[in-house]
Image (cartoon, rainbow, N blue to C red; front, side, top):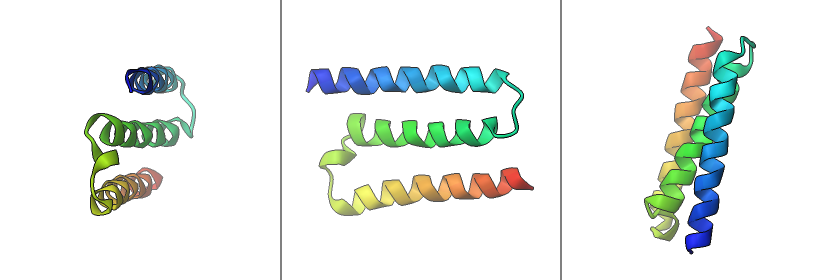
Length: 80
């Protein structure tokens, strides 16, 4: 279990570094990729560190739906 948490932490750090690099680059799609990475990091934290992985199926669906809707709404706002 500790090995799994270490790997999740390592993935979170790599995604954070990638987000930081993309924030500096002036590229049209950078904001979309950063938002996608943030949603991915949210799901990793929720499922691994907050215990959603062991929770009832309702909470798993709720967390995934919430993060998906958040990303969709933000994508729509970015397009404008």
